[in-house]
Figure 1: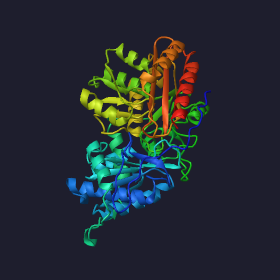
Figure 2 (figure 1 turned 30 degrees about the horizontal axis):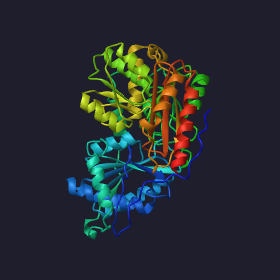
Figure 3 (figure 1 turned 60 degrees about the horizontal axis):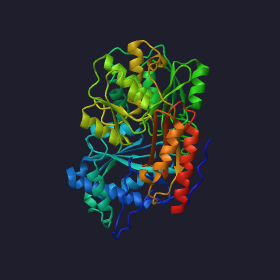
Figure 4 (figure 1 turned 45 degrees about the horizontal axis):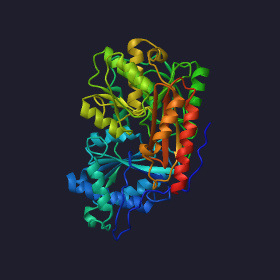
Length: 472
C-alpha cells in the first residue's frame, strides 16, 4: 500500500466578507460548497449570510415567497446550519420549508413537488462528520445553474440588510412529503412488480436514508436486514455505507441474502453486493441498467460515464452497439452530457446514477429500484447480469494537496506518464485530477494485467509529492 506524504494544512476556499461587503472568491465546487465545520465557509455566520444572499437572488428571479426547501443529512452540525440558513433566508424575505433529515434526491423531488423557488441540502455527502456542505437545486429539481451560483457569490459581497419586518419569510414543515417521495420512487416500477421472497441487506451509512430506505423495500415485499440506521450525529459514513462495503458483504454472506445495497451519507449514491458478497460499483450497475434498457427498447442515446469510468465498461457496451460518452467528473457534468447527447442513462463509478427519463438528479433509492427491477424482470441474480462485463484492473489513490497549489500540467508530467504506462502495460489509462470536494489530487491508473499498477502509482505519487513540496 502506498502512503502519500502529508502536505501542509490545506487552505480552505475564500470566505465571504462580513456585513460591510468585500470581494468574494470562487466558492461553488463540483458539488456545492464544502468544508470543515467551524472553518470558513462552514461557520454559522457565513452560512447565515449565504442564506440571505441566496434569498435575495431568488427573490429577484421568481419571487422567493414560493419558498425554499431545506433538507439535511444526520450530522450534528446540520442543526446549526439549518438554523443559520433559515434565519438568512427569512431576512431576505424568503419563506422556508424544513424537511429535516432527508436524502439529497428527495430534496430535489420536494422542491419540484412543493413548487419551491429552490432547494438546499446541508450535507457533505460521503465525507466524515467533521465536514459539512451546502448544495442547491433549482425549481426544476436540477442542480442550480452556474449563472445563479455566480449571482449568489456576487450578492455575498453586499452588506446584509433584512427586509422590513412585515416581509420576513415564514417557516413551516410540509406534511406527507416522505410518503410522497416513496410513492414517486415506487411509481418508477412496472405495475405488479414485487420484491416478495427477496432478502436484502440495506446499509444506510447512518445517513439520510436511515428511515426511508428500509421502509421502501419493505413496502415492496422484501425481507430487509438493515445496517447503518442508528445515526448519532457523528457516525455518518463511519465504517459503513457505499464507501465501506465490507460489513455489507459479510452480512450478505452470513445471512444468505439475495444481495446487499449500500447508500452514502446523503443518499444520492448507491452500490450493490451480489449474493456472494462481491461488490458491484457504479460501472457495474450502469452496465446492468443499460443492458436491461436495451432489451426493453428503453435505451435512448448514449450511456454517459466519466473520465473515471473503467475502459472495460466502454468496450463491453460497445460490443452491443451502445455508444459510450465520457464527461468530466461530477454529476452535473454527466447530466449536461446526457442532455447534450440525447441520452437517458449515465453515472459515475462511485454509484451516482442518473435516469433522466425518471428524475432530474442522481437518486440512490430510485437507482436501487431500477437494478432490482432488472433482476425481477429477467429472473436472474445480480452476478449473472454482470457476467459479460469485462473490467480492466484499476487503482485510485488520493494525494493530499493544498487548494492554492496548481496541479502540474501533463506537459510537466509527460515523462512520468510514459514511464507509468510502460509499467502498466497495454491498454493503459492514467488520470490525474484535483478533487472538486476535498483538498486532494486523485490519481487513477488502469489497464494491463494489474501487476504494474502499484509500481506505476508509486512512481506518480512520488513525483507529485516532490512537486507539491517544492511549491509549498
